[in-house]
Length: 329
Ligand SMILES: Nc1ncnc2c1ncn2[C@@H]1O[C@H](COP(=O)(O)OS(=O)(=O)O)[C@@H](OP(=O)(O)O)[C@H]1O
Ligand SMILES: [Mg+2]
Ligand SMILES: [Mg+2]
Ligand SMILES: [Mg+2]
View 1 (cartoon, protein in one colour):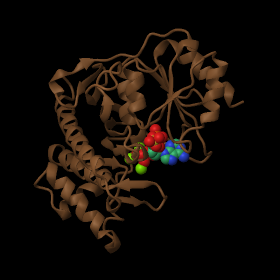
View 2 (view 1 turned 30 degrees about the vertical axis):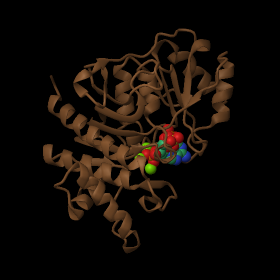
View 3 (view 1 turned 180 degrees about the vertical axis):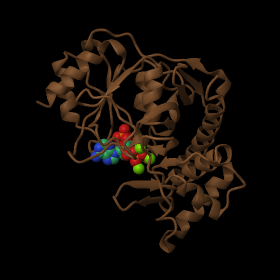
View 4 (view 1 turned 90 degrees about the vertical axis):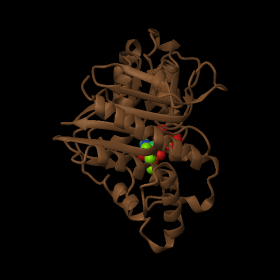
């Protein structure tokens, strides 16, 4: 099968990073959190997961660059020495060969600028850091992009119930897809137990289950309420952090994921969407931005030609996109 090695390496890297994040989330203390220059939060687990995944990729595919969310500049500052030593501690628990220098070097492998030619990986070591800090959903998201096209995606979702119908049952899922090969989910506890997943077959948008971000700064909650009302949906969107929303639509737990811009100048980051995008498409779903335009991953580190996201199961796609476009007029 094409991309067999890439998939195996990516799955193992995301599984290990998910382990690191779970361990960190259980006992996170103040010294393990930090605010970046843009005021968004980052933790020992974001840095540790990026170091772990990018060092694993560097060993397996030394010629592949990466676009990662985090960089080491804050960790190198004297005032963050304690944060840095905890990052190294967490990374070493999962990979004993990592030391302080290799952690910094691995994190900084994520500085590639992306673009339309060649192949590169894109990593969000923790997507939904705010959800992670609240003890809720988050995802480790890794994708492979070649000539601007997303070819492979792996999503580690440590707090997501394996069976959506058993919310109190086993938690921890790995979702993955390779272009043209379908989408799958396995419990993080046993990757050999993967099963095929697909989007739901709802045809009436009034019956569609919607999901959206928890954070009101990341999506316009008022606008989604008016869209569901216009479509005749009685139930309001349920809120969930991170690319777990792509997982929810990909496995038929929700029909629609809306991400509606809150600030005109905000550009969506490729690592916030690439892995979820390919899993969703391979599960049978459809996706566009809030103007109905296809997502363009070939333009660098952001989706600068797109605004927001509309991701759905196939039969309701057109009517939902129409309602989203109309809601902007
Ligand atoms: N203004 C604005 N608009 C849209 N998106 C934004 C915005 N600001 C931040 N971000 C990105 O949102 C990512 C988190 O996704 P979610 O909103 O789905 O999760 S959460 O509710 O924050 O937990 C989050 O990813 P992480 O930083 O990896 O958590 C950000 O990249
Ligand atoms: Mg962040
Ligand atoms: Mg993110
Ligand atoms: Mg992140």
